Image (tube, rainbow, N blue to C red; front, side, top):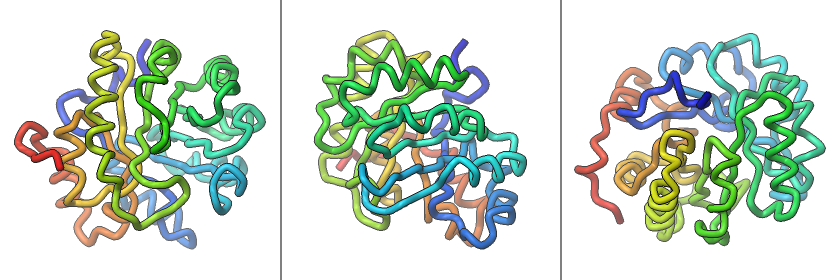
Length: 234
């Protein structure tokens, strides 16, 4: 049964990235965004695969009782296999690993599914979308990175929109539309979301766009009512 069975297809899906929340007020931040977001995005970084360190299993377990919305754990780690069981035990519903993990990818996806999680595959800017077609039958999500991994507050690559369009066309060509959704991560701003949606994005990973919003109702109403066919693709 598809991970997406209870989520709408008629609008853009939104993940709230807890990396952009106020770390001193996680409970308040989740309470504020919870009525609106479809999922929560939790970046896990080991300081080797990407710069810096981010979220860990004990923290995810502490956050899990605060919401019933799905937790999407994005493993930006050198050895994803070392973290999958702990992340699922902590409450992860969807585990995404990176195509850059190379030969570890099949085993990592298999381990995540065996542990009871849905699976995703993330593509950094240097990964050819066509190279992940063999994995489409193993995943529920393809995560297209629009910025360098582990860096916040920068504009997306000028190639992010065309890469999104290419990836979505590959999913459709494989007749995997119902099983696999394609999300955009990195550089998600008011001026970039419409073009990404027009290019085929099923969802976006939002950070400051929602957590810095002074009117959550208005921000999410705008995101949920976008008309992709009316938006220009840069």
